[in-house]
Amino acid sequence: MAKALSDNSDSDFSDEEQTPLEKAFSKASDHVRKITSKLDNNQLLELYGLYKQSTEGQCNTPKPGWLDGKGRKKWEAWKNLGDLPSDEAKQKYIDLVQKYDPDCELVSQSGPKETWVTVSSLRYSPEPELIDNELSLFDASRENMGELVTDLLKRNPELKDERDDDGLTALHWAADRDATHALTAAIKGGCNIDAVDNFDQTALHYAASCGHVESTKILLDAGAAFLKDDEGCTPLDLATDKEVRTILESAIK
Image 1 (cartoon, rainbow, N blue to C red):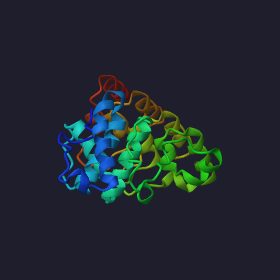
Image 2: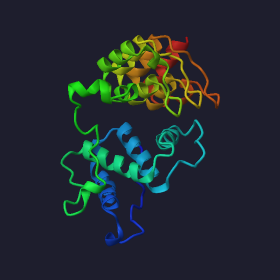
Image 3: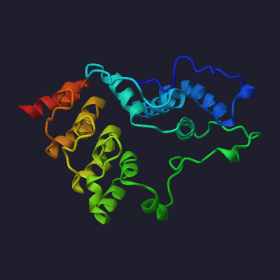
Image 4: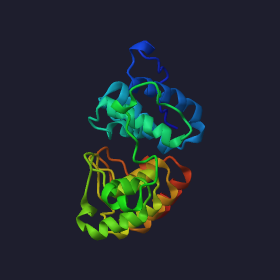
């Protein structure tokens, strides 16, 4: 399970020298320790990436080898943030902590919160009339919003080939989050089952390396191929979960 914060979250600055954002971020990282057992691995990975981006900036470390499955996922969670500014990463981290624990009070009411605090669009369910206008195909895939994925692809067929800066398609995002409704909708909507990201990994690579049984089954049933990534690894090479390995091995036979 990925760590969502470092072993040493002490700031180099005194409490008086910290901005309201820095204070809230420090409280958020401390609070994560209290709710770690309540979070799943994907949530912790997302928090981990934002923490690293907030404290160290853009990822500048080599990608771990394929034998280090957990290390690769942590590296990817950080790498996928690109050049996101530190302050934006801090705010996103705070918003996620508040999303995962709505009762958590992180904002100092005495501070000038209107100068920096933003409300995460993910903290509340979007209003029905705002969904189509505000959420992208990637957003819908991450949040397992199958109906919205279907609607977006039906109205904008060209989105089936859309990729983010790291080459991820809607299928990659859905497989990474085990968002099975969105994954099925994206496949039915015409997304390329074997599309590869910037590291030549397919959605099946993501599902397998994350140990997502249902997503692995869905992709195989849709005809996903056992392609090799840029390090020569197939989805089976990356799979550490016993059930996922059994499913993949059966598909090869």
